[in-house]
Every structure is written in structure tokens, then in C-alpha cells.
Image 1 (tube, rainbow, N blue to C red):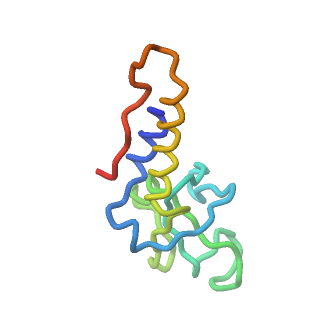
Image 2: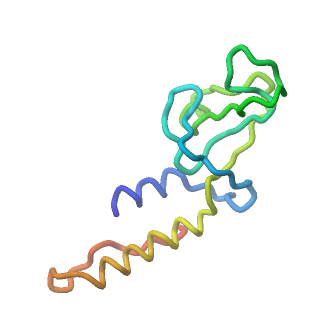
Amino acid sequence: MPLYKQMLIESYDPHWEKHPTRVFDAESCDCCGADIWQSAMICYTCSSEADSTQGSGQLPLIICGSCYVDGRSCKCGEMQPAHARPFDELLGVANKAIVLLRSHQVDGGKSTAGELSEK
């Protein structure tokens, strides 16, 4: 659970409810190649194909948060944030896992993991 908790902390956006959700199924950053797990910046105008023309129906340009913070962007400058799933759904999955782990403890009642909250 510590790794999942760290992933949640790093991908948290206080404005997550305002951003659209989009399936990031086996997609990666077009700059560094990192897997996109929860959040990314997307441009539907610019394509990830180097030789394609803008708006040609190609795959959108997808940039991870780290590359975007480093200054990488699209040609048109119209990138928008998107999330793979609502953040409260991620918290729900984490809390269900914690409850399940606690219900199967054999270590004399010691805490398996701290419950997560959206803070």
C-alpha cells in the first residue's frame, strides 16, 4: 500500500472534478515514454505522429505531468489535463484494499496500513 499511496499523492489534482476522464489503456508519454497511469496533458489538435498534419484524425499528443512541468508541450499550445478515472474512485479502491487487508490480518491486530483520505 505505501507505493499506491505515493502514486495517489503524486497524481492528485485539487481540481480533478473539473477535468474530463479518458481511458489511458497502455498509453505512454510521447516525450519520455513513461506509462500514463492516471493523469496526463493531451492535445487533440496536434498528433503524436511526427509526419502527420494537425487535425488529421491521428492519435492525440499525450504528455506526462513530469515532461509538461519540464516545459514540453504541443505546437499549438492548447494542451488540456485529463484523468483516467475520477480521483474518488481511486481512493475508494485503496480504502477497500485496506479493509480487506485488515480483515485478514494474522499479526495480532497491528495496523496493516493507514486509511487514505483526500487531503
